[in-house]
Length: 552
Image 1 (tube, rainbow, N blue to C red):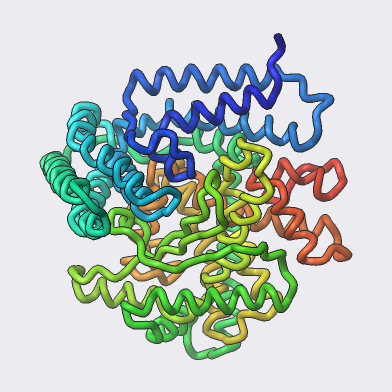
Image 2 (cartoon, rainbow, N blue to C red):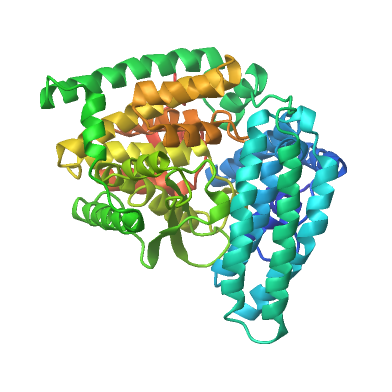
């Protein structure tokens, strides 16, 4: 009997979620909450065969008589399966990125503690099972990893994640256990201690191999080009993207210099930015400062009728867990889990490290200055990532694959586009914030040059860090955190997706014509989920030209 598209996609999404129980929990699927899972060569081989099989099954379905929505589902599923399969082959992350194992241990615990999707006692039972499995899990990872084949920067990343994870197990788990009744409270605290000891031992083994790791973090040109073409759907290769990025840097630098020159012709823009950084909240006030700017951005969206804001959506601002602070110098948006009820997101801010040297603490405070808070709040919340993911969730209720899938070109492009939108509609009403907005635009252009440089042109970590310091005036603390993020195993092309996506959205809006209101354009754009923007060009604009403006 011929398979239907819905059958194949349902099987595919179930297979993907089953492959990583921790990721499933994070997405709001709680079937395997008591499991950690284990990813090794045999599991990877089986998974790879499954992914290739799904591509064949999906490509065999006759789409000619199906709706645009169904065709979109099929296209998204094929892209996701192809990208996952290629990533397995290219990165072998389970043996080359030891930090990945530690981060998922922290995520597997923290989600169970923080999200009230079930009674606290039920979540505690799942948490206990996962904590008790950690020593054996890390012993298996120890046998699995190949030090000579993973990049040297990954050693330090792993040790730093391990430090945060030990703190998390030693402090957060006992606090959670304190609200419980019966033996499970003491069992959780004991299991957390054993887990922390296992993490400490694993970290010690990383210390022992410092200087011996011989692998490369570089994606290489073939894989990079595959991601551009297949994952992002853009008509560029790495060389074209690099040259386009350099052109964008020149244009953004000129706009920044012109604006700064008009403000104060005797003071370079870098000094003007440095002065603005002197006005910052105290460390304990970071979260409140961002929350205040988030509320201003939300009110602006309502006042200017920029986008529909659904009922019951909420975005909280809080602190980032210890184990996630490596590579996130400012913070991260944690959107509402797609497979759980509700429309609640958490914008998690990286607190200052009280044990860091004084100059690093000073840099961290300056990085969170008031001008930066205002310039980035809308990007992260209203109408940025939080609100986009709320629309995503509401739009994909009938499509499990589009509910699961998020294109970084769409999501990060939307976030960057909203900075332009808020400036265009008058939210950024003081010179310091406008200066930071222009600096941020230059930063995203430089990201393209660094992304292609790191992965296809032999740029070193130190060279990339210097480029952010010299071109964008980032302090060392933030620059190093940024580059640490760019070299993660799953991040080639991701830093470029911000600018490519923003350009594509502006192009789509222009092609839809000036007669379409901002709210109508934004609501319709967000009504398909978070798919590659090239998939929507014809449907949104009504013409046959599917290029979305990312071509230089």
